[in-house]
Image (cartoon, rainbow, N blue to C red; front, side):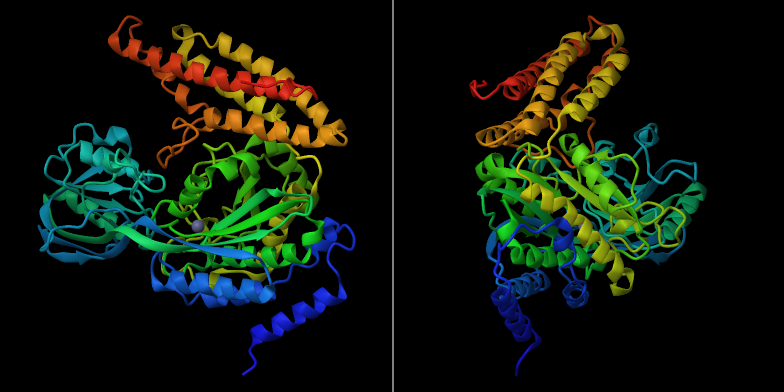
Length: 602
Ligand SMILES: [Zn+2]
C-alpha cells in the first residue's frame, strides 16, 4: 500500500529537482513563508497517543517516528543510545488511619525512595504555614516543629528544598500538598543530569508523595484538631536505563563546523501534548524548512530531541554537554532550549536569554511580534545544560495571560496551563495557529544566528547586569566586604566590550572570523563565573541562583561579628571566588580589546 509518507518523500524529491538548492540567498521572510502547520499537527496527534515516559516503549516509538519522518524528508540525522540514571514513578497511596479512616489520592514524584513492603505507618505533622494564601512551606515554618521520626505534611510541589528541610528535621516521609486541584507529576532530586558519587548524597532519602490542594487542606484542618496517623506507600523504579537521542545536523555552507543548537525534550509525563509534543513537532518542521534552505545557511543548525528530561532532571541534554564538551566549547554559537509552543490561550510571549544576545533578541521580538517588554535573564530549568561551557542561551516561552481561565495558580510549564504535568495535558490543550506562530518565532531567532556573517553578540548589556548584581551585593555587605576592585575590573571589561562591538560592526574579510571567534571566547570566559558556582565542567544543583552566584554569601557578612570564625570562613570563600571572577574578566577584557594582532590571552 502506498502510504502518505511515500507521497511526502516523492513530492519533496520533485521540489528539490525543480528548485535547486542555494540558487540564491533566501530572505527570512521567504523562509518563514515555508513553515506549515500540517505535518506539525500530524506529529502532535501521533504523540498525543504515546506515553513518552523516558526509557519506555513510548519514548522509543516517538524516536522511531522522528527518524522515519527525517528519513522521508532527507534530513541528515543520527541516533544515540546511552544509559541514563532515571527514576520512574510506579505507584503511591496514602490512607489516614487515625482519628478517622479514609483514603487520599496520591502520586509519587521521581526520585522519591520506595517504601518497604507494607508501606510506612506513622504520625503526620503539618509544618506550615498557617496563612492560607501561601502555597509553599517556607524554611522558617520548620522552626519549632518536631518532625523526628514523623511524616511531614507540607505545602508546595515536591521540591528538593522542601525535602532537604524535612530530612534535616528528622522526617521519615513527606506528603506535599500541590497548589492545584489536580495530581501533578514532579521530580524531587536536585542533582542536575547524571549523579557523580558526591552528588548521590543529595538524592532524597525518604519516601514522598504529593496530593491535591483540596485533599491537602482537609488534612491540614484535621491536623489542627487531632493527632493524625497515616499509612503511606511510594514506589519508584530508579536506576540506569537505556534512552534514545535523535539529533539532526543541517550543514552550513560557509562555516559548517560552527552551529546553532536548538532543542526540546522528547520524553514527557504521560502523553504530554503541550509539554511537549507540540515542541517536538515544531523542531521537526524547523528541520524540514532549514534542510530545504540549506544552501542559505552560513553555519550548521543542530536540532536535538532530548530524552531524560522529566524523570532524569535533564539527563539527556546534560549527557550531551558532558560527552560533546569540546565541540560545544569551540563551535556552538548559541543554544535555544524551547518548550511548550502552540498552547491553547498562550497568546503572550516571555523571551529570555543571556544578555550578550539581549539586543539581538529584542530586535527579533520587535520586528516579528508585538512583544515590547523586558528580556529576562536565562534561568536554571528546562535543559539549560550549557551554562558551564559558556554557550549563550536564548529562548522564548509562550504564556497564558493571568486573567485566562486556563492559567494555573502555580505552574512551571505548558505556558502555565492548569493541565501542566497532569493526565489532562491532552490534544485539546494545543492550538494549531499558535503552533505555527511560535515555530515562526523560533525560526526568526535561528535564521539570523545561522546566516548573518557577524554574530550578533553585544556585551554592553552584560556589563549593566554585572554592575547591578555587584551593586546589590555591595549594599547588602556594607563595610564588611570591599567590592571596589571587582567593580573596577568590570569597568575595564566594559571598555573592552565597546571595542569589540565597534570591531564587530565594521569587520570585513578575515576580521569577521576574528571578531566572531572573540565574541564566542568572551562568552566562554564570563558565563561560567556569571552563572555558575560549579564552573565549566560540572553542574550546579537544580535551583535558581543570583548572577555571580559564588558571591552570594557576602550578604551574610554584614550581620556577623567581623572577627568571628564564620566571618573568616565566608571571607575565604569570597576571596577565592573573587579571584575566579577577576581571572575570567581579565581574559575576557584581553580578548575583547585585542585587534588584528591576535594577542594571546591567558
Ligand atoms: Zn517541558
